[in-house]
Length: 153
Image 1 (cartoon, rainbow, N blue to C red):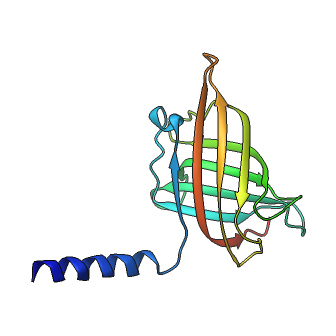
Image 2 (image 1 turned 60 degrees about the vertical axis):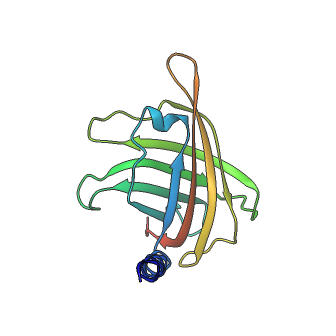
């Protein structure tokens, strides 16, 4: 009886996790210094004009109202998009109530596993390297998978 309950709970959890929405993970040496905990991932098109050129991936915690704490905000330049190719990450920030941001972005890339279109599902990963004031490098890696939302900027 106990094994069947565990199987039922596992099946329910699997069903809940696969009901849609956006998923993603953050990891890397910078997470030992900054809080990388998050409960929501949002993938948005934030291009300044009608052409899809910029995608922003927000890893947030807490309610998405007012000032939202962001474990990471990654901005990807997709103006020269090729599926599976590394594209430039133009910004990677940490937004917290204490006002402390990640160190200076040294380099970053984003890779998309599928074609990108507003309303369609996008998945991929990013990697960012930061240079600290002490001159050492810290890294942040992440994955994302979910719908690409339009922001209307």
